[in-house]
Length: 166
Image (cartoon, rainbow, N blue to C red; front, side, top):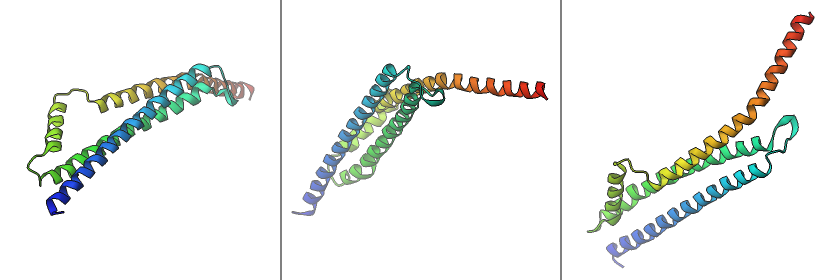
């Protein structure tokens, strides 16, 4: 096997690995979407359950939902960064040795397309993660607000008793 064939075989292997990486990215996104769905179902079925100190199942699942949404957003962002590195730093450098550069041309086309402010699939994934995080955060606030107000009222009662009783 001569040098050119070796480079081409390495290129093919790396391209296959990149495609496997992208497939893993899609499987990861399916996991996060399923996790969000399961949390929402759990919220629906456990809404009336209250634990110690008036902490509800809704609050626990909402906090879990915010966490999962944040992890999903970070995961999408890191996969995008790694995919860009695989394109720009590895595949494009290998393609410099070839007469035809399909991935370099593809990546340039994607960059030009993105310049038109069109939502890409990863942008939609991030948007869903942000919307779900905001939904779960709103649930957290709605569950925590009464607890905070109860605590504030108790503190005011104690202060009024101390002030009036001394």
